[in-house]
Length: 132
Image 1: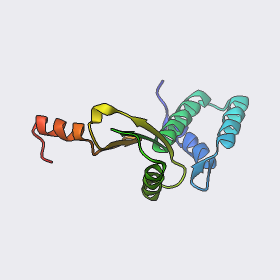
Image 2: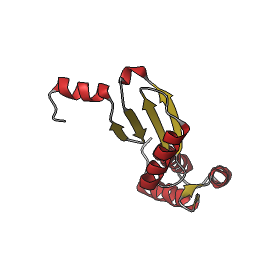
Image 3: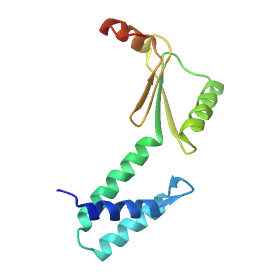
């Protein structure tokens, strides 16, 4: 389904109405969807589809996946969380996992941003002939 420019504008204004103090308010988002479904304005399916896309992008932007070669201490996790919140703002949801294949270092993914400071990543760069 092709989404019209008007539907995109409407979805964006609904999305902005759901943001409180820079963070998405889930209760407001649910309320918005309920009201749109109840009112069924022209092109409401396209509006809701684009609204859902905006919500997914916001969730991805607020989700950080941290992989390390070995387990991290609570102090290290808190320091990393504070550093990431300085760059990306408050409200990050961090998930930590251990991936022995990294050999050493960290790999962090936040939305479409990937920071690869792992030995495996460096070896892959060398293999592909990329400059370090």
